[in-house]
Length: 189
Length: 189
DNA sequence: ACCTGAACACCGTTCAAGT
DNA sequence: ACCTGAACACCGTTCAAGT
Image (cartoon, rainbow over all chains, first blue to last red; front, side):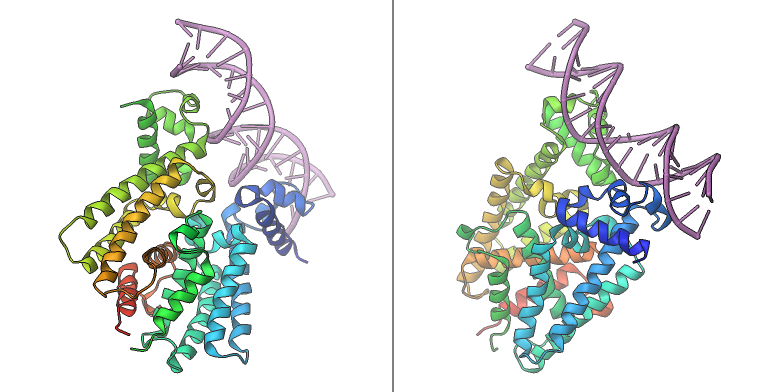
């Protein structure tokens, strides 16, 4: 494995075990058996390394979405599974998920990162389109509807992570919330 | 003004002008004319100061929501205005908004912060309930529906801040997205 | 009680120097 | 080309000392 990849892998591991603040270039370098400033030979700075992690994770999600999309399931089941992929990722890798949609420094990045995120999103749009073809989702531009669904998923995940979801508020989790949304949207006119 | 309030005000100002990273205890202290470690006499640490900012901003939002709720407008207009309050705040104070729903360190806080956020949310629930009474929103627990609407707003805001909203994707902004959602939800069965 | 200055243990980042 | 060690300019946080 090339040093670039090793650094990204080490950063992922540190994010998973200790969160954003655990990813110091010193720790990343040390985890790869190189000095604390050798990472600068591979990435411009800390943000560039984190952006590389985000790019890799967007590609990971895109692959998972693609797999769901090409399965033999019903479109509505595919949609549910697609959203579940996102929710599961956010629970398994909270710090890495946070990097994808809630990190201002990363958001500023262009290029590869943007391309990877657009690629992942395109898969979701495709699945939403399938649902619409069967009349399971209302008529609206697929991309618009996909953004809406995805935004709701992200919002629920963020609110839950902020400790804002309580049973007494009438919402017990992210998945039930998304189920309700899809159900309300799929009502026949 | 007491020193506590002065520190919070200074932190707000720094967040607005330079973002999260500009809020060093040294800068906050200096802005208040005290030494770099005097803030520790008023707040346990940096996170506690930021949590105080978040608490104050939740209270600010709650007041704005209350004002909208007690206005003479139609419930649907109140809902639109409530969501607009959130969107406007996120645009005017991005770093402070990020603190409210996207900061893991702040999310861990309990006590005053949680109370303030619950208070703000209660207003939204009330307005959603009014809309439901008039049949403008589907029948579901008001709190559940309120969370759903709020989550979508937050998700759209976060995705836009991450640079993920493009006209070619079929979604030009946060407000239009929310309009579409409300419209789809309010369709008659 | 409240503040100050010095100090410690970290960082990100740069730079000159090594192979 | 790629790496290293030293160094700089920051931080958050702690502590002893002042009033």
